[in-house]
Image (cartoon, rainbow, N blue to C red; front, top):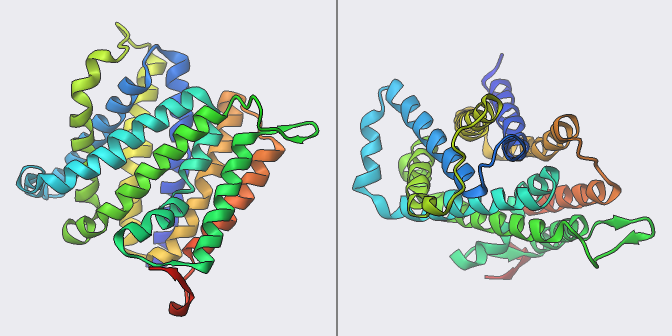
Length: 303
């Protein structure tokens, strides 16, 4: 097996694991009284400690000192892409279907392009078209479909979709803020330190969280799964894949995440996939494709 094939397979595995994130959160809510705040803290404290253990097992434990030596960038990454993103996504999963949250969250490249002018990057005509197309897809999912067609009024999913969009925006901010940090420290160490900071930032608020006196075995397994598989293992697989394959070749594997969510949500949560979701999925994928394609330097609109 070539390095390219191995890298693609690792990327596919990471994306499939990411696709289970919001299904696992929904299962936790069904099996326990754990709320979004407690779920988010458990997810990233377990994930961060698991990644820290992996670094130590590889003889890289000393690198974790960066958590204290250079705290400011990891504070901001932990705030945006861990604490805020995780909490908003967890609340959204209470209010709308897991497939909806997954679709909006995996439209992250669209939100990255939307925010990129803030750091001096150019918003080109093609990328602007991709942003508008992707946002139209998200809006279609938020609106929902009645028998006679789209119907904005009274959409029960709208609050959850708006929160998921907020989570996607904070993840986009994390992506942009993290570019230089990843170049300096590497993806795995950056993600580990950010997760630990994110969990630390949630600590002062845990007094307001709903903590059940005990968790059933199913709920415990769901929490452990959430922290280890789609949080720690998926990121480790992704950064290993990036060491073997160019990012542009790896990016399309992320399209699998919302598809995996749809399949798992149908099997485990009995969530039904409607026409508006499928149409929105196509529009979002089209928007991601447009925003991810290289641009001719003369096509800039703003800068």
